[in-house]
Amino acid sequence: MAKRRPSWRFSLFTILVIVPASLVLYYLHANAILTFLVMAAALAAVTRILAESTAVIAQRVSNTVAALANVTFGNAVEFFVAIFALRQGLVEMVKASIVGSIIINVLLLVGLSMFVGGMKYQEQKFNKDSSGLYSTMLMVVVVGLGLPSLYAIIAGKPENMSLSVSIVLGTIYILSLLYTLVTHRHLFVVERDIPHEDHGRWPTFAAVTVLLGATALLGYESALLVNVVEPFISSTGLSQMFIGLVVIALLTNVPELLTAIGFARQDNMTLSLEIGMSSALQIALFVVPVLVFISPAVTGNTLNLVFTPFELIAVVVTAMLANYIGADGVCHWVEGAELVAVYMLIAIAFYFI
Image (cartoon, rainbow, N blue to C red; front, side, top):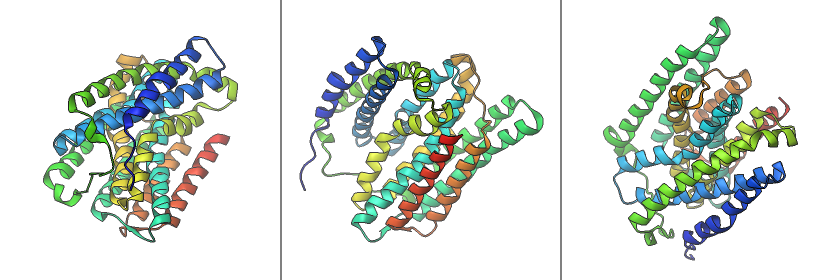
């Protein structure tokens, strides 16, 4: 098998071409659609650099530190975009992007991984223990997002309830990390080494430097991207909900999507499933509670956990399918096609809302 090209070439191309192009278009007030698309490409490229550097560090530290690094930096782009969007008053877009990240990671990411892997292998197996835990946690997410929405219909303002629910969601996420990394880590041992990766050429200091630089650049690009969202909406006629659920959510999860598909082609469906499920849970149980608590002080707009019926139905369907697909520990390409089809149906529905 041919050795993979060094990732620094892509990093250099990103820093010297894609990011400068996005800045030029933004500050010259170019066409809103073109500016948004180029800035989205720049954001995805910087996110990939961040993911590469995090992977290098994760290989050289303990599992606990690696998990904390993934939690902190793995969903940094979602966090930055949400913060700046809330400051612009795009609350509905932020909520839709939260739902979008959940369904993309479970339906599209896992579905494409199963489909692509199934094209190469007739049958792929994965860890039923990890899939069972993640499926149960998704049901917790359904309850956590559903009850404040129901409360808002019955009693009105749900801010205090949203705060209380966020505490429970954050707590159960910490407990799940304790379960998978400490008390029952033997059930979740997965081979993570990729012999054809070129991570070894990155010294640790260089990886940390790139990580911090990419994080800062990610925050800056996120702020600029959010500034062109409203002109982009005006030019295309798309709704905040569709932009958040499909465009922003897909944009912020490209690295995880590509990584998971790569593992599926190596017949490591367990890790592909873990990437998708854990990323969805990080958003719902870690990023969302943090945003609920800090949004009033940092953005001036309050993020609550009240979602529309369509958004709740999308999350419920996603959790149900995750429980069904993960029950037997075996997957085929047609199951992946079914998950992708459900994602496409949800995206189509939000397009017409």
